[in-house]
Image (cartoon, rainbow, N blue to C red):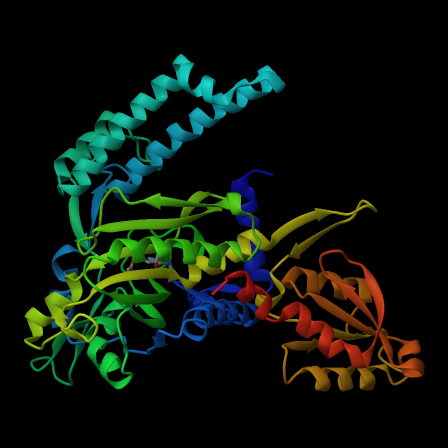
Length: 514
Ligand code: GAP
């Protein structure tokens, strides 16, 4: 199965099993907007809890906030989003399709990378044990040629993005002979900048109405509340403010399912530090955040850092944590050193002081900020991609199983009476009642036990508990484990502790060493 086919299956699975639906589907959906179903919302909530607790509960110097989506319009002038939150767009004159110029070039570079990797893989196969990969990369004329081609374009691309040189971006597209995937032609318009913020009107009459924006990042709610939280919480620098909330961007290239949406959710944390210490904190947060991802056990080799070629208008250093999705390594989280850009600009635009008096140095200053910013939906897709397993079984059957870390699984336990009679449903219901205050538990009595196991595998339930004739005699049940499919006989009194041990977040948190 190709990675593309795998991804299609994953998307179909998300719909079939109540994880993600297209928004307003009965009206044929709305582009790049999605709804989370009964299992999706549980998984999403569990991801948010993992993030929130690791920030707010496990760090004494980080507190939470829940700011409004609507903010005073000046916020977005001060933050630079009105003037600089743009994507460079280009249209193909034949297909009339619109693309992000930077994405067309990045995709072209990714194809060259793929070509290089294919050359290396071919040689590895040919030379077997004696293959010296480093030497091959350094000496193969074909590899060298591709690397040089890529590097030349990469340098031009990075410069063009940093200089906002739209003509040069178009020239790179022409020089690389990039064609529209729909029309196949290279008949391109000029490149234009397009602002990504959605706007709406606030006020009851058109005349009195004010144009306001749906926030494109949650971070600004934190910046404008910086002093409120610092003073009321008597916070001392360094300290952080964490927030989870919706953000909105009018993305032109909306693709790859919930990876790039127009309405999405962010988990952001702004860490306020003494000027001059920001690089040390930036490095620290890079490591802390990478450890958070790796603790989920999806394989360290599936993560990498990717430093930005073009820094956002507010940053002096930025890196992404990328995960290996079925469609390649892509950004899940950004870690940005935002300097004092935001607080200083809010000070300028509002006329209100944004300074902090540092009792240790006796100085007042505008703090510097290191932010960690992760999309809930991208994290959701990361977890789904990593968990989705098409498994061949020894008896020749196959099963689709979602191997979630148990703490994140939408349902922790399914309780199944073997048959719908002889007091088994009542006993099963008793077990549900015993567990439901602490865990998400479902009761299932329809179909054979085998079919019920498969349905629970497909939504990633770690435990299936079957009540049978013996249960009524000795108060034991069969517990079937999702990943190994092993079954064991367990006393009902032990169930709570068993589920707690496996599904608790504590196991994950301990790996973070915080
Ligand atoms: N406050 C900084 C900021 O917003 P960003 O790199 O633009 O930085 C941070 O976004 C994270 O938000 C990304 O790493 C990604 O996970 C998520 N994100 C951004 N745009 C998104 C979109 N259109 N759909 C889904 N997630 C998105």
